[in-house]
Length: 553
Image (cartoon, rainbow, N blue to C red; front, side, top):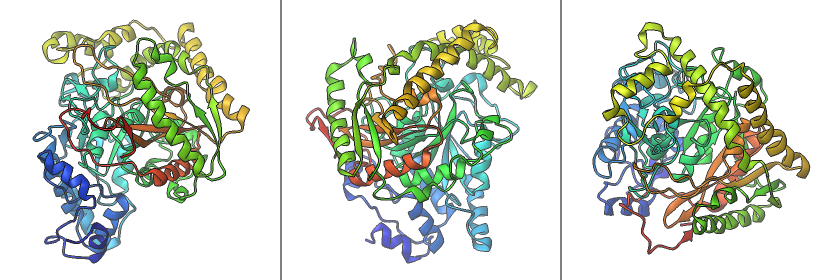
């Protein structure tokens, strides 16, 4: 059998070519779990483009392969339930892009590549946009979201929509991440009884399980990097304003952003470059104005950690230990210690530890801001569609949920919705004071302060803990993590896999000042190449407690 690299360069006829697996161990694990081996297992964007360029296969073949994979493992077999809707036009779009490639050549690295979108991104096509809520069933916006327009303009094939935590996990204090009234519960491909984390749960699980090579998620606080960590992949949460949010169902214009989820830093960097840019429909993107480069592939150097000065954040779990899992925290620290040693071995100068005292103080003021923003931003979003929207305000959504309690609230309620609905205008002192305090704690007294004081190029810390057991009774069991700092500050954060705890992936975050995506990508890529811990999931029914506690393989 041909190996993947030689296959991609051989130019065999796509209709008869037999794609080869690159990771035999992954294939054996998948087969043992009752899942068929997959031709595109762990394939990268570069490799797909080489195959498309050589004629080894076509965009249409890729679409068909991924649709087969989704049919095999998303609703059957391990039944990950990561995909909420498929695009009926995807095969025809792929055919058109194949014809364009033959006539004019490719538009760029995403030409002909199937992409999954989180189901809060508006698409003006035959798919609906619902944020996982039955209240928006059948809703089709009249205009693509800004990020969707960019993807289409660059030749991506929108394969479908990924499931998510309903309303991006901003409905109930007791919600289960990855559950939506429309889509049900997404499962973690590494252990099916475990949670996929965050609200971009379906997007991350789909990438991890090789149902696509690229997915796009959104984050308000942890919902790109958290699922990336729990699903063993790379996620980039960019600076607010680098990527358009226009047409995405909002929580907060102060913290919302979209970003790529991929299996490698290189893939995520290429996708980020395609997504970045000014959008007249999102005023925040005007602040970009060339502050961060478009060609992030230029930062993919093997020695990207050499000569850097990095602060090590070790207090990211201390404020959660009381009433939490001290043993779990210790396992995370052990794994993180190994990651820190690698960073040092790769040539970085470490300031260890860096204590950020504001890390555990963000919650109250941040939540107050999000409550005000959610009501105002969601109402403004829905008002933009007039009569074509099935609901027109947060108040109407609350009423819909009450009328449809059996389907929409079988496990948990809508206490966050009710708190948000009680809020007044954003001119109120409570809102303005909370916004000022949040930014001060995250920026001036947080990231900016320690980077100035210690002359740092970046900060690193454990993104979050391993996936918890999915619990539809008590909801999520948040293990804490370092991600709130960058989220509240509006600064970039990159999750990279750093190892496993009982076979469950755990990631490390590289984060820093606004508009430093390029340097962070350089460092994250160097760490990834030095460790190479990513491996495909085995779709285990539960964690194997006989496995080594902490490992990189």
